[in-house]
Image 1 (cartoon, rainbow, N blue to C red):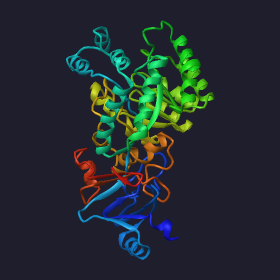
Image 2 (cartoon, one colour):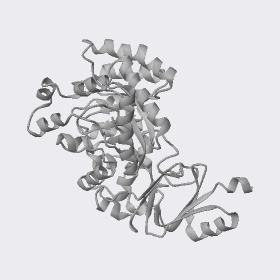
Image 3 (cartoon, rainbow, N blue to C red):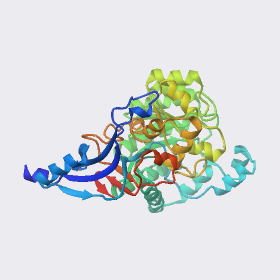
Image 4 (cartoon, helix red, strand yellow):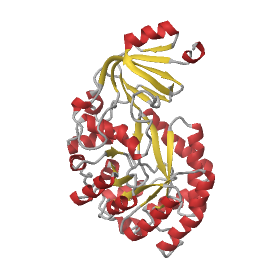
Length: 415
């Protein structure tokens, strides 16, 4: 008994703890549904949460059993660590020139013809070594962690060849082994057809026959993504590709409905965990996703970077969807990468409740990544926690991302 309890640590007291527990899995969330504990503490052991309770009660128990105690005097509000469920932060180079051309009125095609676009990132990422990609990814992970993100999905997709996609995924794996920020790797080899191929089907066949088996063998990723759009892959190609990947044991997610519809139909048909982007989605697509149980992951960073409208987040919630918000942090369309700021701006524009916005970057984002032990502060969940220097949780979104966490813990360890 004594040996086991000695590893327990009590954190607190916190002015407020938002547990994000016992919320509906989908649809609207009223702020009254938030579980807000006043003057509370968290008991942690082995990287997991043992109990969230009144601090005085927990401190009496800590004294009785000689638990370690990490006390705080300043007012702080505790939330689960943020989860960014869609990023492309493994890349080399900058596309600032693309951005300058875009805001000056140049079209996507004009930018691509001048040497910009996704293929510019592909060229630079192919030229980079694994070590260079590791260092660049570590820097972005450092920033994300400082801003309260404790779990982050990362896609490949700037290699577009078997060797270069493996190089990206190996860089992600190396960072994941040594960085506190937990990375969830996704193979996005189907980002677009690479210049070496004239036929999309032939490229996807190469990915299925050569790349995915190598990924499985090296345990580099368990998720597969595809970009469904006129400039990328068709619905038919995508369904065939995703069903084969699913048969091979991969979870599925889809870049869907960014500029035109069709991706949601694919996501529903193949049983994807999430459909991401959804700026072009209408009531019909919302119905498809709801009936198939697909999480809607919206990406306000892409809307900000491209100067286009947001996805209809309010309509999606009212239509019964599980809504996640992610950054789409990438070198082209979404270079900002600030999850809390983007969520706050989207919430203001789409009239989301505080509960809906915070759920979309914690517990519902965990659902988008199929991570059942993350996104809540409750017994048995990972002790991924962030504390903001305020006594009122409403100030977190009120300051629209400028109020940053004062403390961040991953698996119970302050980082």
